[in-house]
Length: 426
Image: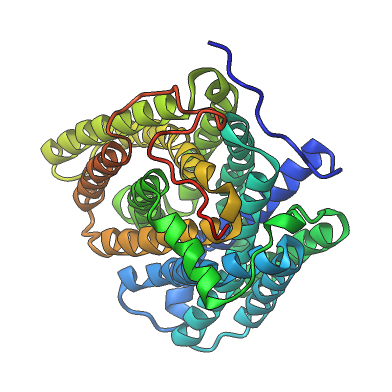
C-alpha cells in the first residue's frame, strides 16, 4: 500500500542546512555530556571527591537541569516562537560553561552543570519543535534519524577530544571548549534559523492555556505511553554513560584508551540512526522500533548470562561487540519512539516537546543515576538494569498500542484510533 505524502515545509531554509543546524543544537547536549567522561577522575581528585561513584553526579546534575528546564521552555516557545527562546537558552548554556572553568568546589561545579543543562534544555525543545513544525509522520521520523545520526556521532569524537585536552591541560579547558561550541551554534541559529511556528499556532501564555496543553499531552494514550517507554529506555543509555569510565578503566584496565572503545560503540549507533532514516519510510516506525526493543532485551539477557558465569565480568572480546550491537538496536528505538510520541501533538508541539522531554530526560536521568550508583566493579547491576528497563518499555508500548508491530498507523494522514484530537479550546 502506498504511503501518503508527508508534510514538509522548511520555511525557506535549505533542507540540508535545517537538518544540520537542528542536529548541532542536539549535539550541544551530547558534547556537554560525553566530553567530560574522561575528566571525571581528575575532577574528583581536584575537588576532593573520595567516592568514585559520586563523580557520576557531574553527568547526572546536567541531565536533571536539562530535563527540568524543558517544562518552562515549551509553553514559552509556543507563545513567543522558537528563535528567541532558543537564543536565550544557548546564552545560559554558554555562560554557565564559562563560569564552570572557575569552579572551586564540587558543589559549585554541580550547580553550574545543572544551570548549563537548564539552558541546554531549550535546544532540545526547539530542535524537536522545529522538526515537528516542518515535517510529519514517517518524514518526521526520517529527519529525526538524520538529526540523531549527527547527534550520536558526537560521542565518537567528544570523549577523545576530552582525553586529548586532559593530556595537555585540565578539565577546566573542557568547559572553555564547550562554551565556544555553544556560542558558534548560537550565532549560526541567530543568523540563519527562520521562525517555524505559524502565527495561528501561537498559544496564549496563561495558566489555563498551559494546563490545557499539558492535559492534551498527558491524556493522549499514544504520546504518554511512548514517553514513559522512552524514559525507561533512555535510563539504559544514561546508566551506561555514567558507568562507562569506571567499566572501561577499572573493570577492563584500558586506561586512557577507553575512549576508543567507547567511540566504537557510538560509531555503530550513528550508523544505525542513518539506516533508520532510510528504512523507516519503507517499514514504518513501529515495526523497526518494536523489533529493536525486543532484540535489545534478548541481547542483554544473553550478556547477563555470560557475565554471571564468568564471575560478573564478561571477557572484553565479548563485551565490546555485544554492547555495540545492543546500542545499534538503541539507534532504532529512541528516535522512532520520540517521533511516535510527538506525531499526534503537532498543534501543541512546543509544550508537547517540553513535557515529553522532561519526562524522558529527567526520568531517564534519575533511572540512569540509580543504575550507575549500584556499580560494584561488575557488569551485573548494569545488565540487570538493561533487562528490567527494556521489559518495562515493552509493557508501556503494549499498553499504549494494544498491539506490537502494527505499521498501518505510521502515516500522519492515518490517525491511530487512540490519538487525541485537538480540543475545542485549540
